[in-house]
Length: 247
Image 1 (tube, rainbow, N blue to C red):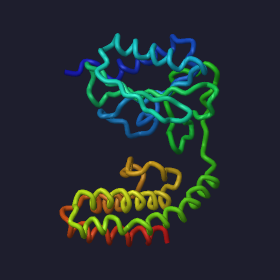
Image 2 (spheres, one colour; image 1 turned 120 degrees about the vertical axis):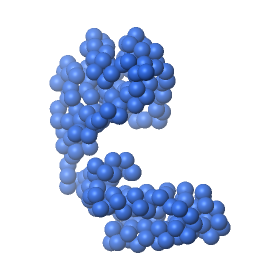
Image 3 (cartoon, rainbow, N blue to C red; image 1 turned 60 degrees about the vertical axis):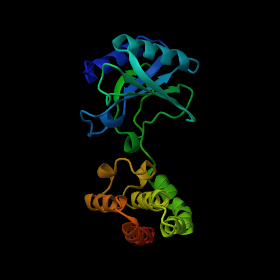
């Protein structure tokens, strides 16, 4: 049974961060920075620390969480540039109430403050007035989105034979996997460039939030395939939609 709620978890995080002098700023992002937080949302905490204090702040946060509830699972994200990220699941909290903790050094320029991408986060702490609101340069961002189209078209055109040949071989699992990766994912990227170019890199996440309802319904129909004959039909439909979109 869950005994730790969201309010308690956030209070614990905030106290641990506020009491640590190496923490320069902290805020809650994710769904809380937009309008779609619900009872299944996790806690997205973003923290700016002194350049030499990343490990120490992680340790301090983990100690505070462990005092609230034993940490059931920790997962480190590797290969990130400009920040470090860890996830925590607590034994006495809902399995959905995961802590997504991002730490970045004060000397790094990446702050995830662009409102169009990251919403309006709830500030927990800002010792040095680091958390100014930023906006994308809409014209430059749109130019980058449009510059992506030639490569997107070329890759799509090159690889549609792969789901087709696996279907013809009767390899349903491989055919479906390549259809999702090589047909639907670039189709969704093209649709995002058309409808919400600044969100073009979000892939299949947040479709209901970002794209028109009729577009989402059509994608959903293409995602679920019953057999190889159905795959053949939907593959053809998805290809036609892609070329219509990028045209």
